[in-house]
Image (tube, rainbow over all chains, first blue to last red):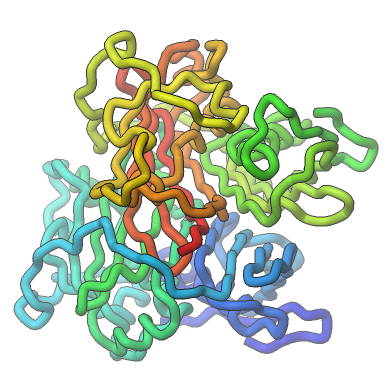
Length: 257
Length: 257
């Protein structure tokens, strides 16, 4: 992305991350996050991010406007807007901070799972291009192979990393927070039209902890809490292979029928 | 709140909802939500809300600027900013939508709990004025009575409603989503300085389901997932007495030491 004279960043969609309609939401969220990461006024590292998907991006260029709405001594609040042809396609807010060592504990336990090299790759064919950008090894709640309405739980656990493997950073972790297939597919074994509406990420790890994860796998766990009249949520956790809870994330997804 | 000539809403803090520093965050979030609810351009009902607490509000007047950044056929994305003396004190985004009946199921089970009238009121003294505006009946994970560092879990379950009781609506439910005491107090049985940074709510219920809850109790359940270097999260659910999951919510909180 390139900084413009007015302070916005110019970016463009990539066919390598194409989804059914528009790009993979995770990559758009990562590009919005990146405008904060690249911003000369940024203070500290990302601690939280909310991205709202207001409209499908068209293939081509876009502008990201990221504004520090409030800067305190060691924290900063950002308002983000992504525009295409003068229309808002994404909105968001982010919080960055200088972190200090404190008493710390993970309360959500990492599930006991087989090592990544013991878990086979997820079965295809899944037609979306972006799926090829990730190596996914589902252990539980894989994408249904038969759409027979037989589902009973929306829980999925998988090992996942970029394909080809690359070192983890805040932008790639942002995108990885959106790799989970729609919970309504898993819960119902039924294909219905869907679209993510909003997504929030809490980054528990700092950059040093992301770098310590290197290009290893992340363990992702995700589950819906409610499906109700057109919208369902999911709540998810991502751990490093070494067992550090790197991020927790939730999203709200539109579904039809 | 009163609409101004420039489209913003003028409101003011209330001593009835005072916290240690500034007002109770839940009431500020409810006032920000209210600017969307009262807005003449609003389409549909709230489905998600994110509020970021950028600075403590001073006692007195404030302005809420709520802007429909994108309006689609049946959905709308809002950007919200609350200002005091020209400075941003809260930022936020909201999503409203016209909802339609679809296949629906609650996946997160309501915990089995004794009826509200069998559960005693939480023990005081808690000095903050806002706490008196809620009737809280904790069943598990009550505020520690002895600060001896003995905590082992951050899980709390309680019955809660407005005091005096009042019919539930989107503004009061927004505030109720923030009634949980800081998880770090419960987990550590230790008092440390804290402050909520950001809070996201998914409204699973529509207005009819809120109205069906009347002025009854809500069952709130909350738990942290991670405490790490100055910030912890919590994830929470609120059910009606009849067992309908009304909202799920998460927040990120600053803590010291």
